[in-house]
Length: 307
Image (cartoon, rainbow, N blue to C red; front, side):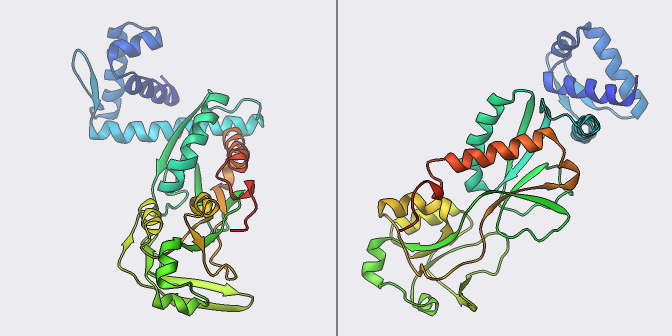
């Protein structure tokens, strides 16, 4: 038995969830599957699976073996696609990372359509607002906002985006509208604690003039959706991505403030390792995602930005 077939066998076994189901999938008898598993465990000198008559479960060693087996098989598939230079039929495992709020609202829905269009690609979506480091984590594509400092990565822009300052009409009627960045120090501001950035420091620029304002308020959170709800309920000024607030600016439930000033870059990128540049599944997914976001009804590009 060669190594890659052992890996494939074990992955099928785990995904099927029982010896009997794996036997049906592999067109073998249950005793043959059991014997093949025993030979694998004997060779490795560890027990990979706990098994009963009805089900199987991974041991701690089995979890490590399964996780790495999937990655290795995916790399083998990737290598073969690169050698053949074939992009006609994307297939294999695609692991995608995205921020929590944006991932829930847009990336998950895009993956649903992509999966129907390309059924031979298996997609795993991992949502987190914690920055990930490629290639230290088992992720093929990471969706990121703003500048991409690592020159070793390929970053394809998939959507335009800005960070905007906004507040509800009720809040602005009560507290007044800021005219200059420093005015924000006299306002209640809703602060997002994300990505371990400088807490409560908002950087605004106009031309060559750049000003960093230390803002404060009664409410702060690490969840963008919660912060947005607070802004809609009149709790203060919020800095949030245009994708999240565009529909509320259009409806008038939020009003943009300090529109003459720019905030740090927030364009949306699909980021991946250079070795995946010729990958069919990556190329097709990035293009699908770009078209999906461009045509989405929430896209800032769908209507004029005169808030």
